[in-house]
Amino acid sequence: MTAPDPPHADAFIALGANLGDPLRTLRWAVTQLGALGRVQGVSALYRTAPVGGPPGQPDYLNAVAQLRTTLPPAALLGALHALEAQAGRERHERWAARTLDLDLITYADLTCHDPALTLPHPRAWERPFVLGPLRDLNPDLRCPVSGESVRDALRRLGTAELGRRDPGWLRPRPAPPPS
Image (cartoon, rainbow, N blue to C red; front, side, top):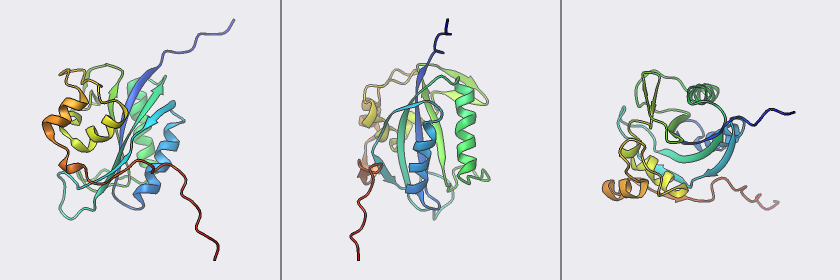
C-alpha cells in the first residue's frame, strides 16, 4: 500500500531583480522554483522603476510565478530566501538594489501574521509591479484579507508604472546566424 500524496497548495511568488544580469537571474530562478513544486505558470516580464530605497538604482525586471507545492508556507519562504542567497542577494538596506528578490505573495487562501511570515504579502495589493504580472496569471485572484481582486486593485492603482512588458522572456532566443 502506498502513502497518499501530501496535500498541495498554489502559491504566487513575485520575482524581481535589478543587479548583475537580471534577465538571466530571473530565468534561473524560475528553473529553481521547479525543485520546490510544479510551476503552473509564469507571467510576462515587466520593466519598472524602483519604488522606495536609495536613489540611483537601475530599473527592475519583475514577474510572478504560480507554484503548486507540498511545502508548508514557512518552509517555502525559507527555500525562497535560500535561492536569493544563492543568487548573491545581500540584505543590508531595506528596498536596496538586489540580484534577486523572491516574495511569497499568497499561499492558497491562507492568512498569517507572524513576524517571520505575513500572508498575503502585506504590500502586494498596493504595488502595480506585483499586480500587473499577477493579473497575467489570475486577474480574479482575491486578496484573502480584503477580498479585492487583482483586476480591481490595478484599476484602483493604475498601470502607468508597469513599463515595458515582454511575454516571451522565457522562450529560447534564436541563435545568431553563423558568421
